[in-house]
Image (cartoon, rainbow, N blue to C red; front, side, top):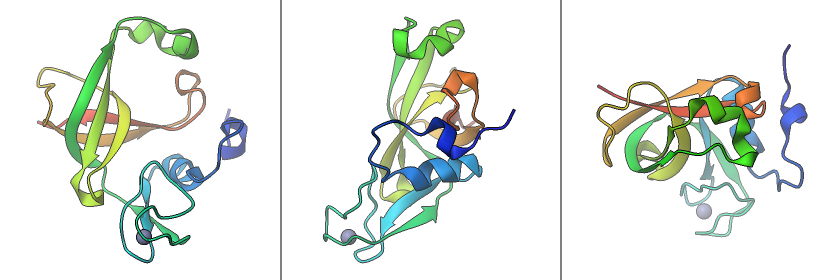
Length: 144
Ligand SMILES: [Zn+2]
């Protein structure tokens, strides 16, 4: 069964981040960069917080960065029961130097032997699945 962007759109979302989700569905990480001052913005907004421009370019970014912080989940919370078989799992906030040090969250994939703040990570994109509530999911993997 295939899924389209419209099937999993968050109800009540402001839609400023639609191009992020469409990019992930295409297997590409795209992030918003102001067309006027060239500043990066995340979370996505309709208007640049630095210069006030309404124009953004959605730029394909290599998903590489360093761990800014992480947390380990030991409990299957009601909103993420789809991940109960993965407990405990690690969620990473990675900082992307190629995108103005924007920080993106994702569940850690693979071995966590070198897990540490500052460790280099590489992003991969999982296709939509029941586990991700039918959203494509950016995942972080430790680079060796
Ligand atoms: Zn700007």
